Length: 335
Image 1 (cartoon, rainbow, N blue to C red):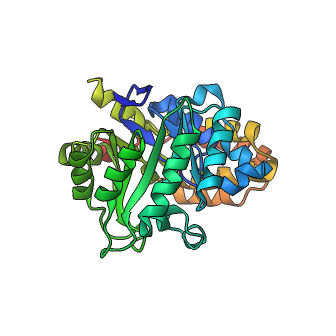
Image 2 (image 1 turned 90 degrees about the vertical axis):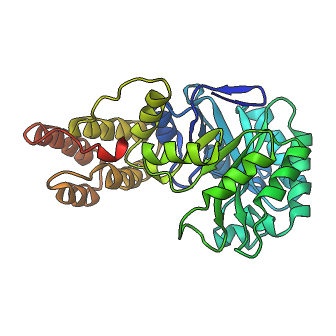
Image 3 (image 1 turned 45 degrees about the vertical axis):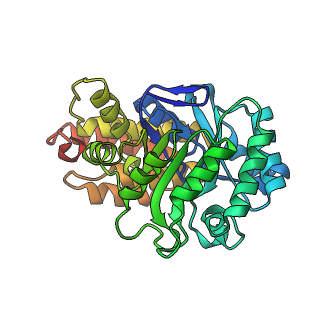
């Protein structure tokens, strides 16, 4: 269990915020699978205070997704603070998270995301403003190790953030310049954990339950944030929950995977317009449909579909197909 301010999480595995991925349907699935908390896609503080419809739609969530955090980014302390206050008042999530981790140039060129790690004074100003503006829920931070290998600041930044009143820190121990290349330096997570008393959540290079166990044992971190490993395999949250509670995992069959494809498709149909539904279905099916004979053929078939009825019929056809072949999905990497 992790305690973040007044929030108690039942498991230590958390779904990371991912742009274009962690929408309401995917969050719903991951919570049902055992993720102890989920996050919205990160949202622009400017978009929030302008009440941009697309931005606010990213913040909306259903009660069954709780506990849920809303992640915000921006470079102006007053704007970021006002957006946090608005989100707390209007949407009432379980926490507000400040993004100091995004390495994408369109964000960092504005001085937001991980660019704040180049200016720790600005980071302190933004964080203090947000903490002062939020009344009833915890404020947390997700950050990277630093801008580049010559400016690793995660530990000193963590100490500053704790003093300001941040209730937990997630560290992705790569630099901005590294993006997602090379190996995440888990030693920095361990160092941060030793330096501060608030919960530290490790993130980076966790692709299986074996990686989860290794990260926890190596760093003594309080929780683990799962990102890309959940794509096509939200069962990773169930596996971690079962491991923590000494429950034996049941094998996942190929039919289980296809049925989840159907569930995901239905959730998208109910939540998105037709074009969004089709495009996101193709995106997620490209992750789900792997590891069995003719998987490539089926992926290509779905990629060529352009209406929900075609997709629905193809899913039912695929369920019949998998019943005729070896129905056991290879779960060796799931521990």
